[in-house]
Amino acid sequence: MAKFKKIFSFILRLLSLAATVVAIVVMVRSRDSTQVLNLTFTAKYSNTPAFKYFVIAEAIASVYTIIVILLILCSESLLGRLIVILDMVITVLLSTSITAALAIAQVGKKGNSHAGWLPICGQVPKFCDQVTVSLICGFVAAVFYFVLLLISLHAVLSPIFAVKP
Amino acid sequence: MAKFKKIFSFILRLLSLAATVVAIVVMVRSRDSTQVLNLTFTAKYSNTPAFKYFVIAEAIASVYTIIVILLILCSESLLGRLIVILDMVITVLLSTSITAALAIAQVGKKGNSHAGWLPICGQVPKFCDQVTVSLICGFVAAVFYFVLLLISLHAVLSPIFAVKP
Image (cartoon, rainbow over all chains, first blue to last red; front, top):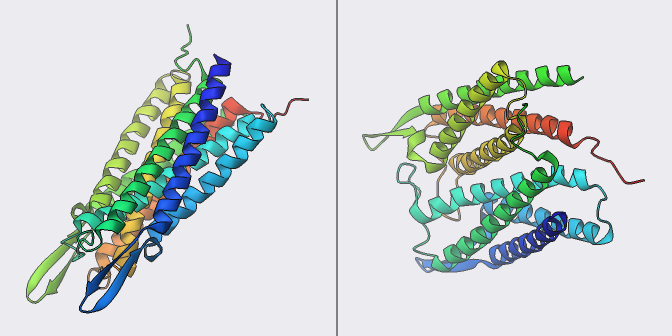
């Protein structure tokens, strides 16, 4: 059972690494142009602080995941308990990066008539599609990390429902 | 030491409850009006999905904190380990609510010239100030919960840096 858990955690880390890398690549390569009155405007992720934060957070998570995978391959138990704390920090980092980017993406898609912010996805649909794919990958990575954290916590906390007799 | 930790955790829960309640009250009461071409526009939190999510998340955290405080007062050890998991969920919830609201508040303050979104804080400064106060309270609550979680985890994980001899 412990062996199965370890292999499952390892696969989850590999999958979340793949998800964060794809999220970064798609977000960084996302761009689309539109012409307004003979002027060309290009939409790209670096124009929006929330998207920049998203890329930085996913990059930190990727580097962390690579380090942990290497550590696991080298030694099985080294700093095992510190990793639970760091996994928690990375889970929070990934979750916040998704919601910040999602909040802006929602304005990009629907606009906010009260604030006078018009939706831009009609003008730059390719950009919006790429951002959506990137956010989905980021969300998947965050879910993987959450499951990973629950597994780690389960190992150290079980039995969870222990009640004094 | 364990007694001190318990009292400290209890105080942290009370403080985070106060912070989330203040965040909700200030956010819900935040409004400001501006006149454009004889038409009056009112800025309020419910016009923005990210701010609505913020209020809902802070409300869930408040209710959860009240329940946990009552549980702690009634019984000291009941579901102690489940609370660590739930604390984690609440920490993630609070963190994401802050960043989503912050992403929108940043556009409200600075605008986004690339997307053609103008800043609105010049027109509705009172609203922006109130939202800022609410976000600070939410941030304080999230930090309290993070510390709370570290204390809980420390109790079950220590010694963190245990390395096999």
